[in-house]
Length: 280
Image 1 (cartoon, rainbow, N blue to C red):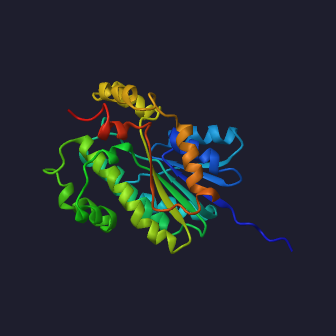
Image 2 (cartoon, helix red, strand yellow):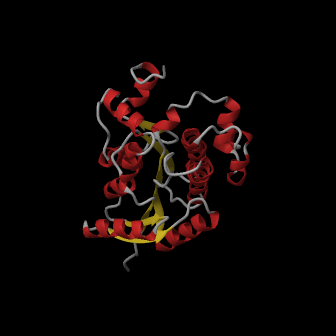
Image 3 (tube, rainbow, N blue to C red):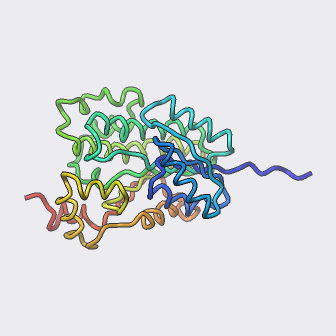
């Protein structure tokens, strides 16, 4: 009697260029579930991947809502075993207020890691797209690190360090959120490991996506162009380059890597701390 092989599901949250680039490398022979805040974004990405031969479905998710993320988990587990999670949803400093950035980028990521950490299959893996911004924040205290890493999700936004008087602007909120993502991934790697699964973060620099183009033409555009010109590599990155690292982290070659954060920014952070991009 033939046994039915369960479907392996890769969940992509944030159907933009980076999420798609990783999905193309790890989604072959699996069911790719694309989720985005906007249904039209998810549908457009699903059409591209479907035309390229992938088995795909699309849905919506608001990562700042527990009910919405939980519904996505239920949709995913109904399709099969969740063996991969690519969390690439977020808002940038030019797109949102400090409050929205903390709700989406910090709380939303912690929520996704918790909810999918409860169902990730043995041998499964996750990747969170953080940012080089988290690496340009000065070191935090051990207490602040522990708070961002381990505070229960529903209490996270109540931390004193995240209150309005302490957050200077949208960029500061973004840097704290992305540092928080990296720390949260470390803490969650311990919990995911108990299920035989792994999770890591990637902190990309300026990668040419629609979001990056928004930044390049936004109020911080001049600073971004300067970063590209003065970084050691001398150019912006591409989604496919992030996809390559994502595939390493999610695949068998990355089996010994968990709880890590891979900074890939063309050396912008190196130049910020020790080179021509250093603050005057």
